[in-house]
Length: 279
Image (cartoon, rainbow, N blue to C red; front, side, top):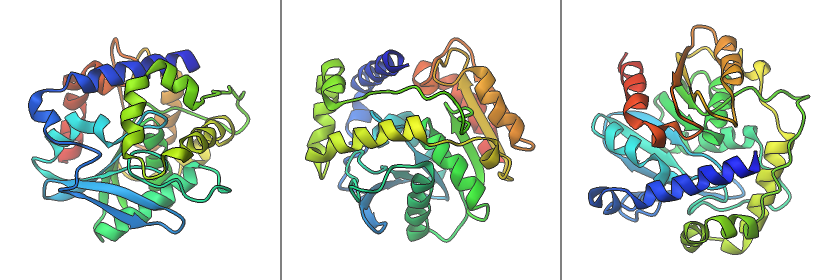
């Protein structure tokens, strides 16, 4: 599992470097022209807004995740929507928060709720990837009045009694596999010396926290669950548990793709998403 995630990390790094000149000219995740902060109690969280229209919130992945990973989505969605991109605790320009408070899916959901409500009183669509997908699932279950549509990419069933698989991520390990990638991220972090603390908290999140049918079955909004057919983090069988537990949800499996399906085949991902967000 750890090796696979590091390979995903490297593929994301390569993909970001390969962005077009037009994309690179917009510093997603570190854009003073549109970036702002919200105090969520024990931390200041950073967000960026692009475009105008009905709001859609983007929640990125963990460990190596950031607002910039959503570049292809932002450029498409901002043509017709107000795109709200939130950097989670310890990622990008967001603070880490209390040293004694663990990172949990509930915390991620509460943080997202606070940021969204500071921006709009309207209901929103939510698009989350990996860690962001789990936060979106929790948000839709606990705040049905807020989430009117949900797109959850790269997620699966994480029951309470599952066998824990320790990730053992450390800053040293991550830097040894993607030095340039993480050094660039450290430069924009407000608390770079606490990165190791963030990584430790994420190890705890992946090993100890759970999100399963008890959450999925509470979701009532139209939902699209998406996964690559070769996602070793969340096999098709695991993604199917999420789909079946959410009444009336849609399931989209992207062929010949692993975890980061929108880097593998963005055209296929967009073809599945475009009609879903129109209705």
